Length: 323
Image 1 (cartoon, rainbow, N blue to C red):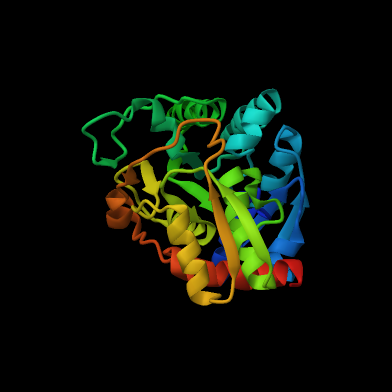
Image 2 (image 1 turned 90 degrees about the vertical axis):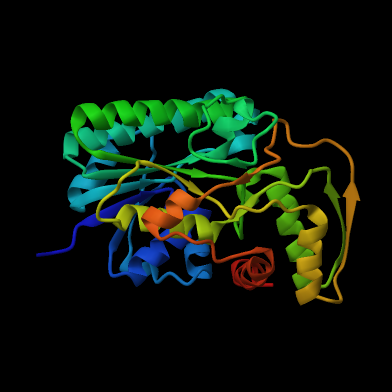
């Protein structure tokens, strides 16, 4: 019997590209559904695109989404297509349409096509309005209280996903990526801190002097390859006790530590962080994540602390940008 497909929306983005590669390594049949179809990133992370079904499609086009599932005999979906935090802050109406209605389209397609499991990456930002004194780490039990439009889109999708799954009998697995997602990407995820990290690594690779604005306090950051690892573990897991998991690394890190990791591998780099200025346009957590549930039930363990991530990031960026 032919193996069922796994639809990966946003499959040529940062987490999607890594996830597609990991699925192929495990003998799975990923089917990419993406409006951009950025094969450059897939190639840069080592994916053989000749082995991947690639479909250009819009998340707001429900018939196209249903056709992608039906025509490729998919029974699971990893839904990664979304606008990220600061992009939603800049374009709230477009962000709400894509993040919420695009996700509802996934749930509706799952209902109509009898999908067995939907993996939905949410965000640790859904907690930020609830974090107060006395907390030591962020676990899955903290009540959601989203302080931004982006976080509200993620929280809304969590509620809708649970309602759809309960009523229409499919598994809805929510993964909260905790911390700023970063990694080699043509768009640097359109987030100011992640753009700054990419500028630092690009300058080091090219041997250029650079002054990088860094107004951010220490916070948790999550390398794209670790996010993809947790996502693939979740889509392939046989059985679950819980349906909500943190994917993070459990550590806070500041700009000086990131720069030190870069200089360790690029000792001649001439990079200076300029402190102060405007921070993120929404609150950030000053607490690290507790991902013990993911470790126990999914077998998730982050593999890319900042020093290892810098090496992988630099090598991939060289391939991506022909540096």
